[in-house]
Length: 97
Image (cartoon, rainbow, N blue to C red; front, side, top):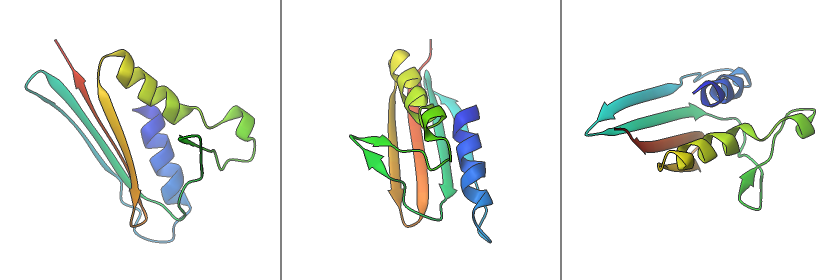
């Protein structure tokens, strides 16, 4: 959660207006649903299906979102990322027992 919210806050810091982050986490029918949506100033860069960091020292950054997706997979969940209409959206569903 920390990485997702940190990324959303950093994206909003680049904006002059519309700094609204939507965060939802709900336990429903033995599943944990996570959803984060935030506005973004520019479309992210990709390389081989991975997001590239826009931070100054990209060697020390750019792995957080990969780690989030790996953690979701580790617990047999699924995740999705969408970037459209100047919004970044992350969603995940993780089974809980």
